[in-house]
Length: 228
Ligand code: CA
Image (cartoon, rainbow, N blue to C red):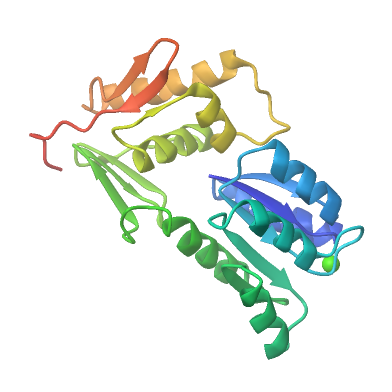
């Protein structure tokens, strides 16, 4: 899952980005409202964490402009403005959630998880596909009854494929959601990670789950007869 963090306090931004990065999220950072809108136009994000007091373009204005184009896009306001009025106006302007500073990192993480889940067909944190299971809260991947160890990149790819199980997703889409914009986008690197993910699933007994259709992308197949 790829997030855009909009926060002008550099130290706070770095701390949040590091913490979320360790949890497997791909994070891009914007330090003012203008940069936020620029990156939003340029990339495909699953969620935006938005500070309100920002240089150049205020956070509320950023939110308003995004809402004009996309009513579904998830935005979590993270702000020091903590009056009830601010919260109500933030939610009225179309933010999906509002967290005031200072905050506990664990709470931020839980709120992000909950917002991202709203996209899924089920509110459950557990996704099942044949003998594969993914617990998005515990970040646990289970294959044929046993837990498998995935690297961060493999996990990001696995999660995206699980959420979209049965659908064809292009390599570009997978890269968009699993890689930071600044990361190395050479397709060799992508192929390397998807190949090693496939190898791990094969070795654990989920042979042929990831189907590759040249020129189209990848699809996670869930055989109906196999029950976890
Ligand atoms: Ca600020």
